[in-house]
Image 1 (cartoon, rainbow, N blue to C red):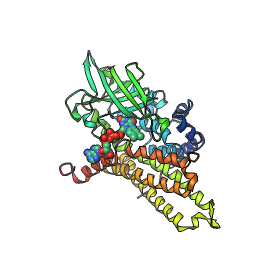
Image 2 (tube, rainbow, N blue to C red):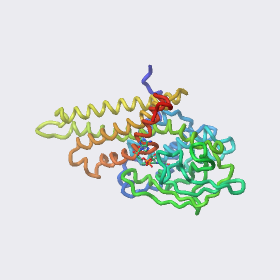
Image 3 (cartoon, rainbow, N blue to C red):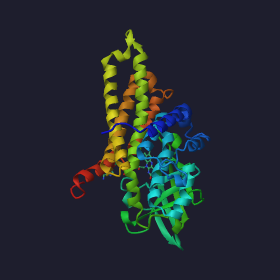
Image 4 (tube, protein in one colour):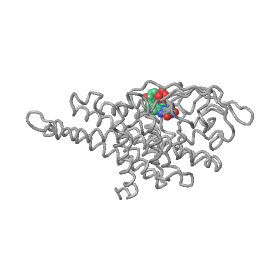
Length: 381
Ligand SMILES: Cc1cc2nc3c(=O)[nH]c(=O)nc-3n(C[C@H](O)[C@H](O)[C@H](O)COP(=O)(O)OP(=O)(O)OC[C@H]3O[C@@H](n4cnc5c(N)ncnc54)[C@H](O)[C@@H]3O)c2cc1C
């Protein structure tokens, strides 16, 4: 059993850590307050190659493995969770397109994603269908050789910035096999966007998107009619582990700051870390974060090794953000009153991690997948 990252993986992680600490973290509070990425941010991320991690070199990407992508998202989230989302989306959607699009589509779609010229959003959730995504209602009405998309998508992360969406709509009967995936440009007067007023990761501008008859051609269908749901669910196995690492990256940053504080803050004539009531809860949280991290990287490693990883990725998705919440909260408590202020990053990270508990599937939704994997569909809820 090997617990080491490769030299390549560590080299990239170090580079992204420097980028996150020097170019991302310093602007996090201002970005959060403005609910907006600064103009130079996405181009700077593109220059770092962060959007092409899961795209082949033949399409301008760097073809990194899932573990490396996890390391990148962990480091980025340690700088600012909100900045991780466009990279997460490019990895998830880039991966889905890589696996399911035809050659012509890949040649046209993947290079702009890798270059950061196309910013992509996953358009699945609807006002009446979140966990129950197999019953989405957005319609794709036949129109000549193509379709017209009508309906509302909601909770679409980076929806305000996205140039393109992987959009799921109903082309057939009720249920999963009636859903088709389309990859289409969103910059169209028939798509209206409204940003949501969020608790955390405000700069990522989660949005509602109303589609009023957006035309899509046969060349914009991904995979084939009726295959959309299965494709995205396969992609979720892997993106759920990435989300867990975003949560753990943020929690890890808060824990590191809490340890520094426990060593430097004096009370009753000694560093507060000398009190077991301060240092033992931190030891517990460091242990849990470490364990959740191992589980999550194992899920990604299994993905890279071509092994089944659905159970492990979904275990990581329900547990790691929960562990991260507790750890980030304990870190904040360690800081006393200063932790409660928005002048320190601890409160913001806590707000950000709550979003990660919900994104891509709630605790219950992911436990359902784990149960189906371990117990079998016939006996599971
Ligand atoms: C930060 C963030 C980012 C997101 N990004 C995106 C995105 O980019 N694209 C996108 O399409 N969506 C996105 N989402 C939406 C997300 O996927 C949904 O919020 C999630 O799937 C849950 O759906 P819902 O919010 O409609 O809750 P509901 O499905 O209404 O569930 C409400 C509650 O009931 C529970 N519940 C529901 N069904 C069951 C069941 N069968 N058994 C037990 N409990 C159940 C849930 O666990 C939850 O606690 C994002 C959400 C957040 C918060």
